[in-house]
Every structure is written in C-alpha cells, then in structure tokens.
Picture 1 (cartoon, rainbow, N blue to C red):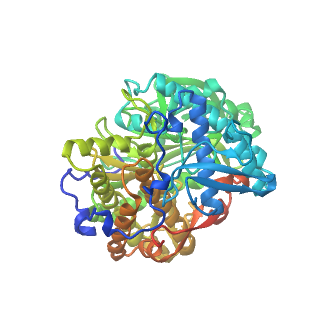
Picture 2: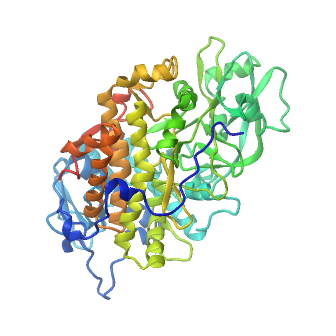
Length: 626
C-alpha cells in the first residue's frame, strides 16, 4: 500500500545548482573575511611533544572521558551562543563566572563562524597546577548558578544522565561498530546519531528509562523489541485515515491488523500497538485504569515481530514494512515528554490531504526529488466523556524507503561516531567527502563545496518553494531533514518528516482554504507570518544549513567562509522563488535563535503551550552579514 506516489530522485550527474547559483568559485582569496578565520593559526591545535597532532577529546580510550568531553563541549557551545560572550583572543576562551567568583579557561580547538566550536577540557581559573579539568556536571552547575534558575539542579541531573548514557553508547559501538544484519540503509543511518544535538545541553538524557530498558529501546545500542498490544472497544476508538492503496481507501485498523496476526481480540474491539514502556506506565493512570476496569480496554501484552527505534527513539521501523509507527512515549527526551497530541495526529493526515489536492503534483514538477514522508492515518482512544486519553495512540507513517534507498537525516550524517575498521570518531559526511576526493583526484575543499551546493539545490530549494507557493513552512531542522544520497554519496534528493513541524502562514489562509476546506480547524497549524519567519529562519537557516556549514568546518573538510559565501549567493538567487526567508536571512544582521540551554533551565516543555512561547529564543549575529 502506498499513500501517494513518491518522486524518483534525480540521477547523479552534473549539478543543477550551478545553473541556480552560478559558477562555483573555490579560491579562498576571492571570499571576503567574515570573522575569525576557521583555519586561523591561533586556533589550530598545537603539536604534542612527540610531534603529532593532539588527540581529539572524543577519542579518549575511556568511554566515560570521551562522553564527558562531548557533554562539556555541548554546554560550552550553548553558553557561547545563548549568552554571547566575546570570542577568544587567542587559543583560550575565558568565560567569567561572577556568581561563583571564578572563570572557566577553555582551550579552543576550533572557532566556528556558525557556532560549531570545538573545545578542549576547561579548567577553573586559579586552580592549582595539575588540578583535573572541570567535568560536564561541574560546568552545568556553574552555568546554572550564573543563570540564576531554580531548574538548574534538574539540568545538572539530566547532564549527568546524558553523559552516562552516552558513555555506554560509545563503549557498545566501539565493541560492535557494524549495523545489525537485518538493518537496511535507512535504519543504519537512524542508529548512528551517537552524541546527539551538538547545541543541546542534555542530548541523550532519557528520564524514566532504566539501563536495561535503555539498551532495549535505544537506537544507539541497536535496540529492538516487540510492540505491546491493546484491544480497544470500538465505542471509544478514535481514528482517521487518508491512506489509499491503488485509489482504494484503507482504514487505520486495517493497516495495524496486518502486524497483529495471531492476536485473539475480544468482540467489537480493534488492536492498537503501543511502546512497551508506555504500556507499562499507562495502566497506572486513572483514566486508563478506568477503561480497563470497564472492559473498554484490554491489555494483550507483547506480540509480533521486533521493531527498531529510529533516531527519535519513539518512532519505530521494521525493514520491509510498509508503515513506520510514531508511538507516544512519556520519557523526557531533549526538551519534551514525547506523547502525541491529538492536534498533531490530525495535522499529519491533513497535510497528506493538502498535498493530494494537487499541491504535491505542482511541487514535484517544479522541484523533483523531494517529498514529505507522509503521516496519513492514526488510531487513538477517547474516554466515555469523549475527551482524548493522552498517550494511548499511534500515528501510522508511510515508509517510502526500500532496502537500497540511502536516506540519512543531516544530524546523523554529521555526527561523529566510531567507524568500522578505523580508529577514532568519524562522521559519515567526512567519509563521503574524503572518498569522493580520493576517487576524483580533487581537493577535499572543492568536493565539500560542491556537495554543499548540491544539497542546497536538492534539499533547501524545495523547502523554499513550498513556503513560497503554498505558505507552508517546514520545521526542517537536522533531525527532521533527510538527504537522499546517490551511489557515490552526492545529494540527489531529500525528504522531510514530522507531523508536528508545520507552519501554515496566516497570509495564505484563504488560498489554503481553497485547496482544502476547513484546513487548520482542528490541527491548530496557522501561525502569524512574524512567528513563522522567526521559526523558519531558525530551523532551516540556523539549525540546518548553518549547522551543516559548521560541521564541514569543525571536521576540517571546508573553510566555513567559502560555504557561507556560497550560501549567500544561493539565497540571492532563491529570493526569486517568493519565500520571504532568503531576504530575511540576507538582510537581518541579527537572527532569533532557539536557546536549548536556557529552555532547559526554564523547565519548558516544547510541546506544551502556544507555539510562540514554547521555547526560549535569543538574538545572535547573522554569519551571512558579519
């Protein structure tokens, strides 16, 4: 069953980007200096006493030390971005800590124009010679005191949890770097995001999961598990589906029943799959216990084939299955407890219907090779009073990826991890660029620049088209954005996934209503253009593209100044598409940026409350205008 035709990615050949952005200029001398040069000799690591380059802190043989270095770097990157201290004057960055009467002295291994700095182990100013460096937990406590937030202690605990889990993931991956035999290319990529978001203070914290559960339910440990099934009386079943098979409508219950074969269902019930951790927790909630007591809900236990968690932890995949399942999971991951909201279930189906109204045909004709991974059906439970029962639901996501489709989210593409057959941590991005350079005889910088330009054309351009022509802005951060790679590793297309992350512009309400009557009435997706511009600039501009540029620079694959100049030129051409974003990014000297550290310190859950107050945003200098 296929809910909609998926466009065939373009063949790998000469890049149409050059038609959009003009000839590729790689000579660094032609690129104006933007800020402290990434390869300024002040910030190149000094040789060790034996003459070799110093070891990367992420490669420390002790997994806990490596994980702690990653955690400390994340905290420091967040603090630098969110509080705006001046850049380093030399190889050391001094971070004043007046609330504690001291300062952190941080070795700068790489200073990034886009915020992807690399830091060595920091020490407290005035500490005795030979004193150990400050670890991530100490840094979190000191920064929490500076912020003066009551939630600082909670953040310290979550930093400790994140570092501890990361150490376990690194140790396991060093022992077994290869993907499991049953994994397809998509799952292999989803399991590779070992260190998490480089601009988040607690990227791998998972409150509520025991160590044994973490190994079972985590993509980083190649976890897999059987789903827990419940039978829901049809009188309290809530569902919707826009899924079709050859034009025939397919109910959500029909889709899940295919994976519940062998289950004995009570009369007048339908099966609903749940994450096993969620199923265990739900029975203790009064509203769920009441449904069980009334015979409207039946816990059938674990059943069926094993499913694999993807990089979001709660969305599960099984190679060869036609669906992925986006499950509710009441574990706090990054900034939120990951339970589906009813409006998000409606939103996934609504976007699918919107695209089928003719919009997708127009989009694919103009920008082939890119699409949205559809969420066309869902199952949930209402109480006897008609109100949704939170956490007892599943979104049915179309799986468009065959065994040979190399679809990689940008976060996983750029994430350092142990690499089979090689010492140290390496990213897939680095492996691709180095391999292409060796195969073509071109310089690493030239290959990196062309790869980046192709990415802008095949992935960023289609997202801008959708905003311009439909008023639909995508929350296209690196976790939600997949690049489709050709056989040699060049970008040939892309996909977007996330039933939460859509912004329907208020200025396009009438046009969208004409495409799909009643759009937004239950999904709560219309947002003011002002908020849309701010969030779109952050997710696509700062998180996605600037983050990619920073990864190229921090991994010594390209000069960030060259890529920033290329992005500026791309935006100049892309402004003709009609999206406000290119002009916004080119003309605003400062941009609004989500502050993950301050959001965590304020104790905010990003899935709760109005879209414009769910997170803390700060103002940062725009690298395009520096």
